Amino acid sequence: MDYLLNQQVSCVSVVDISGAALGRAQARLGPARARVNWIEADVTGDWPVPSVDIWHDRAVFHFLTAAEDRLRYRAHLRAGLRPGGSVIMATFGPEGPDMCSGLPTVRYSPQALAAELGASYALHETVREAHATPSGTTQEFWYSRLTRID
Image (cartoon, rainbow, N blue to C red):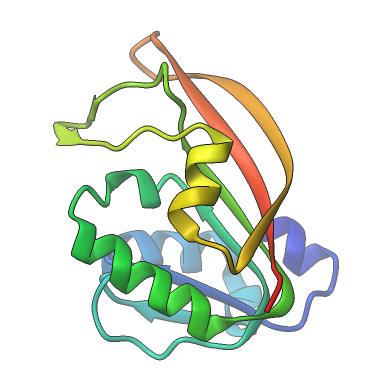
């Protein structure tokens, strides 16, 4: 988010279930926080989905273990991401943990993520990351960029 604001991107929205996390981000940004649309909501619940060209999800989707939660997430993505826009998603890879912070996860290869999102999205780029955790372990992440094609 900081990088986007430094690049003078004019429309940035942040969705988080935690008001405390949003407050910390707002405090860190100082006056620049006024340039962000802050949304405190459960990503699978009801919230005002802004229309965007880029949807970035770092480590949320893989915590949606219930099919109905993933369905609601995909509906928000469809409502918010403009045709031709990109979704950049970081998820645990097949070798990633099946539990994280005490929560179960769903692990995805880039191809499995593309299949989960459906035929409206084309997979364009993938990057594997060996993420070092504060506890000293390594977790496999895949960053995938998909484009909405309809």
